[in-house]
Length: 314
Image 1 (tube, rainbow, N blue to C red):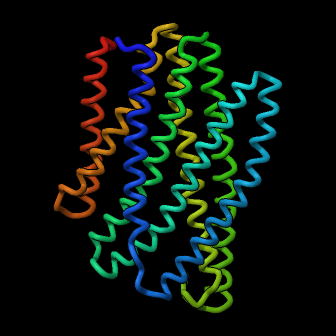
Image 2 (spheres, one colour):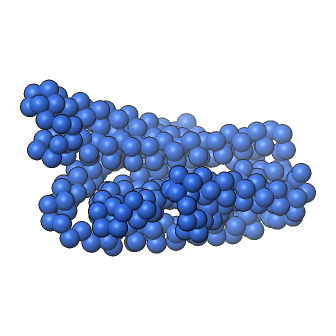
């Protein structure tokens, strides 16, 4: 059987692997040069608008985090408040990294489609999108793994309380990022359509319409940063829920309590292998995605079964 320190090494090792992969994908996407001045200028405007929105939103969220920190310290203790803050900051960091990658990947995908065709554009978009997915999984696994290591031998109440505060921090950012980004993107979309199609009679997303820039900025902040925070909250919340059930059903049994987080680590490795399998399949794009998904699912099921068998948890 594994003790808590072994679990920590496993969690941190898999998290580091996911972060290393994220860094490589981010570098590949951002290193692609755009030779077309006009499209590079438009992409820069969208990128600047998205990051400006995100910085403004995060400056307001910092006040919310500070207020919640004080309340949690008064109601529970400072450790709970720190856990809340770590969950919130992890979600914000995931959104920031994902936004940086997405705004670069949009431009890189366009250039790849123009220069090399559909398949190259698909692979570029896949690498850019993978940054958000894997940074969410890696940061969540790291945060929950560290909390589990620090509080697994405390009382059941302490472990669940700290884990719940961490999840609450992630949920707070998801609420504001999803709502704030959604309001912005809908307002920008409607505004662009009204100005362009209704008033000027030009097609949707026509480059002659300045509001199209705001529309694209809204798509980035709503569908990238907002959705990323939402996914992070769901990811952490589902694990904390399973952990709470484990505490009730198997009190004091470390192997059972660590199982939800361990399955996240196995899933992260399976997802990485599924991603790399796309480079092996030389078929249609939709078939490549299906095969990669099936590969990740099969590897996850096999890895989970092997782990359960070796730990005697069947």
